[in-house]
Image (cartoon, rainbow, N blue to C red; front, side, top):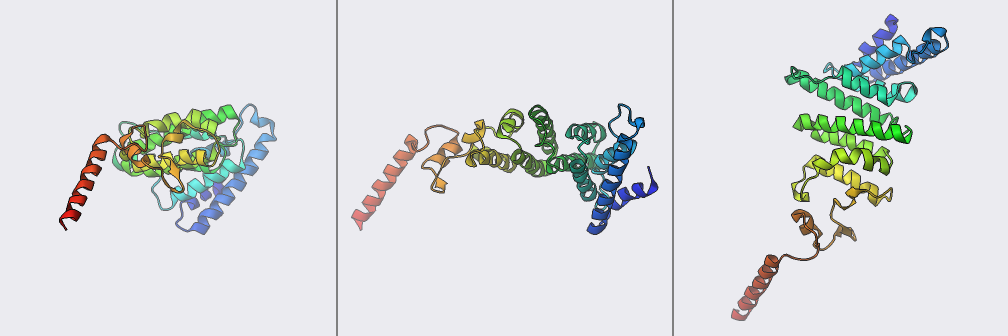
Length: 277
């Protein structure tokens, strides 16, 4: 690989936004040219990626775990553009690189573990924002969405401070997919985060539930998740819906017997006070 191309990776970590953008654009252009020349020669054989592109994919994914300056922003932006520009860089390839390059081992502790988790989060986000997953044929899209959502939920489960960022990226993924794919591939991973009554849900769980419910509200399809949230009438929760959601029970609109007795007792007290006055 030419020294000029290698220099682009250094510039990707710059704190200067313009330098990062210029480096990413130059890197993508150089890799596009290298891959075209490689594909046009007999040297390619059965190997789909040229050596420069193989190295770049591996280094971009690995660089997302670097805490140096603006590395995550620069490497993440470059990975998004690389996936969007070169169809031969498949979502499956990126997932393989995430799993092999950003490995979590039992020996990883403290800052090292945190950097790897952030790297996984940024790599998954780059893949989602490249819109390559949604463009895949149905079978590949379903399998890739399942792997991607599992990676994201695992990242959120590893550290509390990553729960909401991981859920936010998962919501982005949900919005790009066909509802049938969400039902088949994403919902089984998300469902365990939404146990019991609504009042017991975590903020990131509620974020995911809203993204799932939005598919139903927009008429994009029917999901098992459509009854996760209380029904709404004229912009307000339906009568008894909040109580039913909080209790996790059925029969929205029917007050529990104890609540009816309490209301009756309060009414009797008010009448006695008025009579005494």
